[in-house]
Length: 104
Figure 1: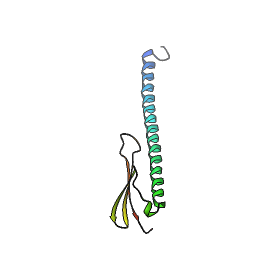
Figure 2: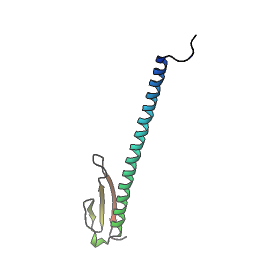
Figure 3: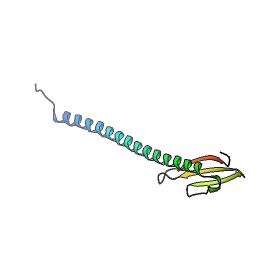
Figure 4: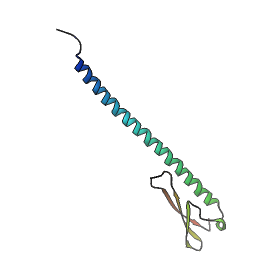
């Protein structure tokens, strides 16, 4: 009786390890990609918040639309503010709606 493993047994074990390792690496890369997208989205969201804060600090007479901001008058002293920010090509843009009153 011989002891040890045959070449076929070693190759099958190696193939199983390669499949498990490849699956692990695939999920690891997918997780890293999702984290990178989340970081990019968070940076864009913070840029939107900064623009809204800048708009809040702007006097009523100085309100002007910009490439990202659309101002729609609702009444003579109330605007609907739409902020649209394209954070990644091919992805849905971030859209934020709020109201801005003449009387803060």
